[in-house]
Image 1: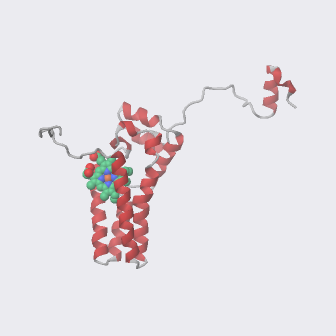
Image 2: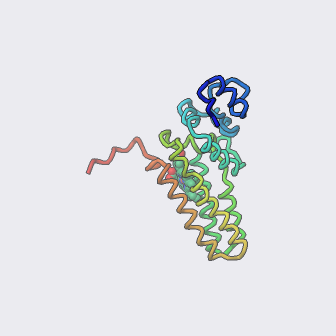
Image 3: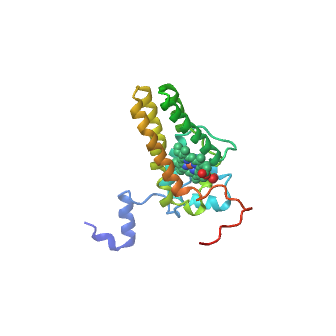
Length: 201
Ligand code: HEC
């Protein structure tokens, strides 16, 4: 059927006729622009961090855009660490409410936890530069499901009056916290430069 393919001119004509060739001459492929939310965040990034984010695949950029879209509250100046402490406080409030058998307080705190703000610049600038790549960041949706998905399930269970089931989600939430810390958190927070390093064992 495609015997004519050996002659380049005829090939081009044939491809054009089949709609394979666009009318425009071929242009070099430009990398897809980052989604608007990410472009906005990148304005406050250092050139190094911006480069890392630009190098992420369009799929991962879309995932991050989606995760952010699920959190419409934006911090102006609050850092990830400050937001983490707020989240811990909500977690403790949930535990208190469950211990008191107070479904309303438990559901409210769980929804506040799930609805935390996005820190200044988004999550990425608080992660080590070396982990801002497709492979490492690919785990973020799973972390989000473990922490916030479980918090929302906890709220629903509490509102349905099923406090034993609500209580069971506490450990699912904390499993998500721990998993993310193992992967992305600096090993020892709050190291002091005024302490002598421990002698080698
Ligand atoms: C998406 C990953 C991620 C998830 C999920 C996560 N954390 Fe964090 N958390 C971090 C990172 C990264 C830091 C270090 C931030 C910094 O120091 O700039 C941190 C820091 C903290 C801190 C500050 C003190 C410290 O040890 O550095 C607390 C408290 C904390 N997280 C609690 C929680 C709790 C509670 C949850 C679950 C309800 C949770 N985190 C879920 C990534 C995460």
